[in-house]
Image (tube, rainbow, N blue to C red; front, side, top):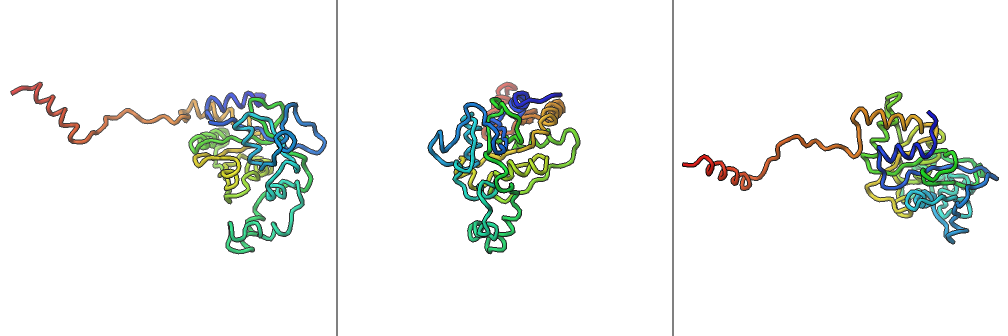
Length: 263
């Protein structure tokens, strides 16, 4: 079964019903042309943004966005995605120290655990709503509530079973969404980071699910298969039971029964 972005989007819309658009993401090599009507934050909006803001423009506004070094406001993402050289200052824990970790050594341990791209390997991060995507994505990112993400997990496991294994640090979730699944070639459950919540307006109820494009076909298959098996969203509520009411409500039934039986 050949899968294109629109086919995947239709399956996600039918089975997941996300509040915001699923997002296709592609890491653009130097010299590769951007799609028509792509917006550049610095050039077109006169602002600099975080990577999570770029994704948010795509999932909330439906815009195709390209974020490069000149567009990027977040120093951490600039280093992690190779737009700027990694600094010893960050690598030795100073960006974590006394904010996320008690010691510099602990901060360095946290930074070591972040997946990173080589310096200047890519020119920009391209994102677009899946239904308007004209390119082959590297990864797809779907934001949703916990039940919707659970539904995506079950779909991903339909073909081969097992478990989805993800890791979290509460920071730099742009790496978790893009670099981790691209490197591992496996889906990733995303716990949105502090910056995603502040700068990209990600809400308290939201999580995300990210997967490499190579998984698109099995996600579509898994969504349909688990749906047939009865795993569905919205989650069906069990309603076949008799409700219980307070005693002063039930008193009315007693009065009706006594009036019907008579003296």
